[in-house]
Image (cartoon, rainbow over all chains, first blue to last red; front, top):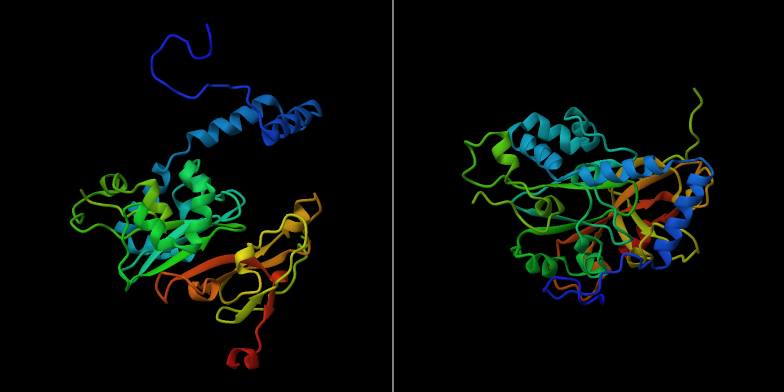
Length: 207
Length: 107
């Protein structure tokens, strides 16, 4: 059986799990060294990857929904995002969280131009586009064009504020609460909050 | 309890600052697009180990004050096609910042 003839019909690029670029080989070598020297075990590495994979934006959606329903919590979140998340049992680890609020006059957008800094403790792993060079370079250069490509048209009177996550802070966009959601409880509100609107590329809708 | 050595913060929110136009080798967390550009201190985030030292397994101490500096898009990109009130805020460590004098501001 050739690689192209493997029992099913859909076309795709050859799957080659052994393909290792320079950095993949280096990562493997460093991991093997750390294990050989007894600094970490293979199981600890596996468990850390598993814990990171299990995080989902649902955690963060809860933070947003709480802020929409509870003005005092929202004030604490905007004053100290790290402490406010701890109230909900979410630990930020070594980084600190800054929550930035969308208003009728301000729209916030998050990027890391240097690499892929992202509030992983809240949102889990970043989407591939967040790590791509086009997003990273264009978000600070032509944010309104990037937003438009995500279907988000920002009127001229709204200031677009981009947050470049270059060092020890991580960012959470607190979107505006959609109209017509006054009667929803926290769980129903959280269901409206998507990963992308907490990065700032889209807006939540009540539909 | 011994205190972690740290540099005192030299800038306050609202101060005009300029990012050094330097190009040292190593693990630098200052994006190229703001080097040599002026902005306004938005807040002091606290003090953190210097990543240029931490990357080489040194202590990173004394810790560096870290600021969020707000830049006007039009000052970063003269041909910026958005609006005048659009901004970018970037985290910059103190050793990358220098004060902008009043004379320079008025020039």
